[in-house]
Amino acid sequence: MSGQNVIGRGTWIDKLAHELVEREKSLGRNLDIIRVESGLGASGIPHIGSLGDAVRAYGVKLALEDMGYDSTLIAYSDDLDGLRKIPEGFPDSLQEHIAKPVSLIPDPFGCHDSYGMHMSGILLDGLDKVGVKYEFRRALDTYKNGLLKEQIHTIMLNSSKIGQKISDMVGQEKYQKYLPYFPVCAQCDKLYTAESIQYIADEQKVLYKCHDAEIGSSIVSGCGYDGEADISKNLGKLAWKVEFAARWAAFDVRFEAYGKDIMDSVKVNDWVADDILGFAHPHHVKYEMFLDKGGKKISKSLGNVLTAQKWLEFGTPESILLLLYKRISGARELGFEDIPGLMVEYDELEDVFFGKVKVDNPAKLVKLKGLYQYVNLLEPPAEPHIHVNYRLLVELCKIFRDNREDMVAGKLREYGLNHDSHIISLIKLAGNFADEFGKQEKANVELDSGMKSALRILVDKLVTVQESDDIQNVIYQTAKSNSIKPKDFFIVLYQILLGTTRGPKIGPLIRDMGSKKVTDMISEHL
Picture 1 (cartoon, one colour):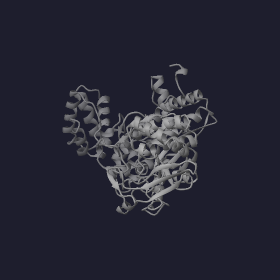
Picture 2 (tube, rainbow, N blue to C red):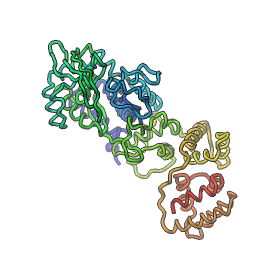
Picture 3 (cartoon, rainbow, N blue to C red):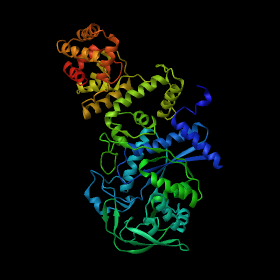
Picture 4 (cartoon, rainbow, N blue to C red):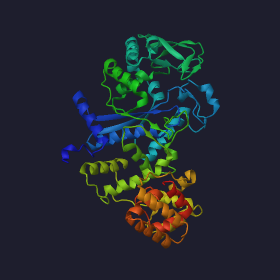
């Protein structure tokens, strides 16, 4: 592989940043600073998918800086969005605030100035914990300070044209009747019930009527108020079909990723930016959504969320960043049970980066090293950590619950495995995982008929031995008597027990895990 075929550090992030810069050059735009943006939803509990939008945008920022450009990530909280439904687990008292901007709803937990900032705060805390640096902006301040005034005025002047285009592009006819701007009703503070019907251009005011409106699958009552709102003085917000474009133009945003669920909105906003506002829309990349293990979209309102805070009870920040930087395309089912695999994968990636594991394919080697560098936010450690298989730690933590750290550390010494303060911190995470989830997921191990036959024999023999040396010998003899290389037999056992191809001496490990548990785990594969 020749050097000129490698873009940056060989990852999809570098490729995306390169495409972005080449596009900006072709547009002839100033490259003194290249802003990337991530929109933060503030109406429900932020999950790993929400975090992923910002983390991936930050990766592009890092790649741009790696290319020699100044760049910044704008983390924009849409905290003027109206509350459409109450998230699972939140108090029913929020029902009275349906359709109100989340920044005007009191925080039900009393720790932030509003419901919207409570939700934004969870996501920002997650970004802080994984090391992402950002410039935080709120919709509330953006609109209050008139930062989108010029864009709103232009959009209102072209509302008829925009309404027709929205109908043509995505089949939504609502904006042929109403303007794509929602004032906050001066009478009831609701947003989506106050629909604009006329724009008075010389006064820069919209006339609106607050009436019943369909939000999701429910009808929300309006108060019947007829009002007018100054687009720069009174609170209100643009509809999603045009708001992204206004932000891009006002903030000079050059890149924003988007999820499959808002594809239609992005398509319309691109046209609004290009044809109405005269601002070439940002470079995009579309990503698939995370699904739960049942194949359902992870949803803030359904309550099947995986927050960064909960994830970090069991895994490291690097495990989250690895999940999000491995690839951007393709829908993925995601659950906490994925954490052990990602923890092991990170160690394997570190071994590749520091040359402890040989990779023959030069292109793959560059990509894996680049991935490791991005997972460490382009600040990789000077030397690798001591590695102990996370699944092994989980299994040991299941055995030892009292004085856990000392007991597990003692077992590691007995197995001949080094450990330090880093491993002690992993024991704490693995202990949390063991306590919360207990049963290990069945590993995916391919077995031929000969291997299955040998494993059946081993299951019968293991119940008759208890000492680690005897267990080790039984495994070795079972392999030999069934014409299987002992090395291959041991690899299969490590895969079944730890989800990896190597581990500590297997006799002591099986003794500590317990023959009954081990034989049950083997039998699940037969």
